[in-house]
Length: 418
Ligand code: MN
Image (cartoon, rainbow, N blue to C red):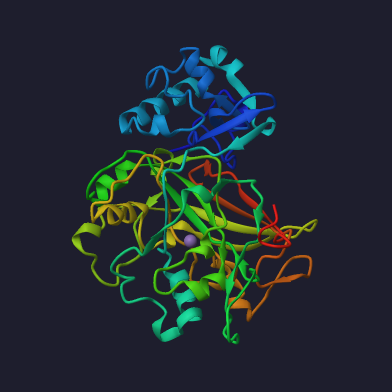
């Protein structure tokens, strides 16, 4: 499928992240206006709420775009998702007679502030990157016990917190926590000294469910995807994680990119999962290509310094698809809600430069890596900005995710200061 041409001229570049082929959904505001639903097209944002109010979009009844989130629309289900995408594609296409009516509802993206695109119902984080699981397991438990015995049989995950999910651009505060290093006799309560990031893809559940889902039904219930940075305090994690998994180490914040790239936009980039080392049980068995070929990168920029790309990898390295994770999530009867967010787990490739966390890139602090300005890093330092990027490359077009950015602020002087 080639680049689809739009009358929004800036959308017609082979490298632009938001061509007509993409049409990602977000929530934006401009100076003096309230947040509302929009769709990115080139360097512009189409005000979906205004276009709906003007009768140019008739999908979903009269109130669906009143709230500043996509939840009400997502809850309408697959037919409505396809109807809106078809309508927007037709109206924004080169030669459309809707151009004159739509033009007043376009705003420049560089004049807009982005907000959370959804109300996150609940947040679950998985661990589906095999190289990441192997690397972290080697550091935490030794090479002989690196991959847990259950790992090749099911997607490992934990229930996180919706309340700590924030949109790209939100500053992150270095946390305090309980820490006990290998050489410490007793734990202490102190600012984390091993604060890290995780390069992940987030899947957003659109259609709610109540009971076990097949992998195919789970795939169909996923509305779209975002980039996701699961900020992680490794020193807190190492002391707390057994026996119930991470808790305070993951409680500070999780950043998502502001644009939801729909499953429909990513359809041309579906790919098969990695080779299965052991057969999966029936409830997880592969039901077609449900991974994605998406190039991913991480950039670290010190305060006032130059950016360094510290990792490049691809989402096709994930051992379990979001559909398999969602199917497994429902297997014991867990109801899923519109707006549920599922983190993929850190996406690392086999090569050292493909590692999606600083923990792996600097091997637990044993092997600090270089930045372009001569500084070195083992973990994130105060003032560092971490940015994730993601691009799927088609034949003459790109489907991009937009930025997923956060800057680390120093810890508070005492944990209880306000
Ligand atoms: Mn994670």
